Length: 211
Image 1 (cartoon, rainbow, N blue to C red):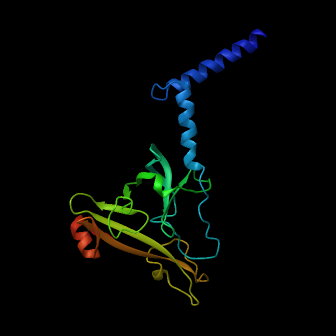
Image 2: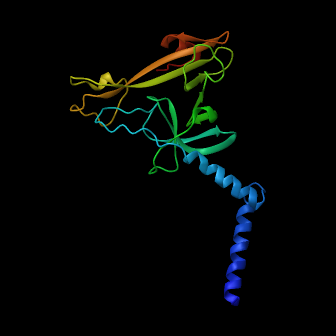
Image 3: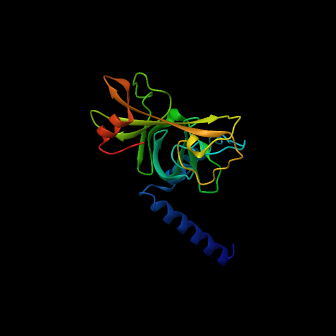
C-alpha cells in the first residue's frame, strides 16, 4: 500500500476514535448502537396529510414544529422537533423543518414536553374516565389542572368566519368552507378519576387566565 493511502487511513481511524470519545465516554460500538437507536424515532409512519382545502390547522397550538424532549421506548431524546396533531391526538416528530413529519407510537412515549409545555397520558396512568392520548399539564401537585385540546375537522355548506375556528390564523380564506374547529376542556384528577373543570375554575386553580 502506498504511504499516502496509509497516512489517510490512519487519519480516518483517529477521527472515528475521537468522535466516539465525545459521546459520554462510551466506546465506539456503543456510539454506533446509540446512533442507530436515535434514528428509530424517524422510522415510523408518515403523519396524516390533510389535502382538502380548509381553514385553520390540526395542531395543538401552532403549525410550526418546535424543540422538545421525550422519552421514547426507554430512551431519552432532547431538542427534537415535535408537535401534536390534535385531530388524531398523535405526537409527531421531524428531523428538520423541511422533513416529512413522522407519527410516534403512543404506547412507547413515557415523557413528553414541547417548548415550555409538559404533556401526560392519563389513560396509560390508569386515570378513570381519561381519553386516549395526551393532556397538557397546566398545574401539577395534589390538585392538578390539565388541558385537553381537540381540533375537529368540520365540513360546512356555507361560508364561515374566522371566529368559527376558535383560534387566530394568518391565512384565513373565505372561499374555504371546511375548517379545523378548536375545542378545549379542562380537568383535574380526584380519587383516581378525571373530573371536568370550568375554564374559570381551572384558571383560579392555576393562578392565571388560561384558554
